[in-house]
Image 1 (tube, rainbow, N blue to C red):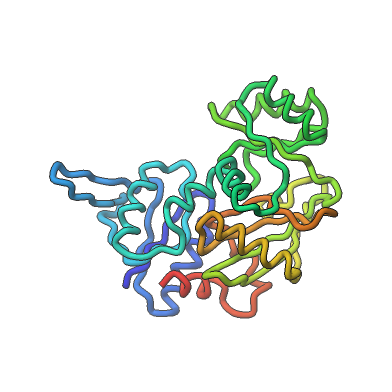
Image 2 (cartoon, one colour):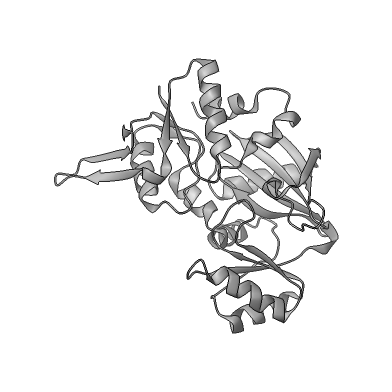
Length: 286
């Protein structure tokens, strides 16, 4: 069995840790260069996936992120049909799209932060913000590590946020309330193979309101309540993910899902897991 590990610009640490873990466990592994991965379609129906290093044939696929790589999504779909993968391509594409993921979580009755999905147009955006009430958080539907996320305390700031996000091109926007009672705090749970492996509470760095590690947030180990445990498993399951990082907020109305990531950068959470976290993630994909 050969493990395929896809490297992308937003989770390079994940690929490096998994390749190293495969070496320790004696598992044959092949690094897949996601930006160059493509698909060859022959006249009689033969399909061949290849990256800059040559043809890719893997019997198992580790977690991957497909945001920004449509050719890679097609190629990984072909590779996955010949073996197994922790996360199906459709599930990854669904999780990558925050608007589609919010709609799917709603259909599955998974508690989540209120979300308005609107066109990239100031009138629509302003109306959504008024319905929610300022301050609000505005996001592009695709992104990672806190990129393409803006906070708006009033209508003027909303206009600035729209102008900055529109630079990346057309697309839908998401508007959510800034849950001020959580004050830059969120809880991240890493799930693999239906098991919660590691959980931390993250607190934004001074002067920063986003609680992501890439932005300098600190974290410490916490335990999930029974309700939270069920919530994070249900959130991953609703999107069809066997491996995920689920972010939740502990609000006065109870825990609510903020976001679900199909390829979380779990490397910063190693100190909060008793064993080798990369090996646990890898073994669940074999």
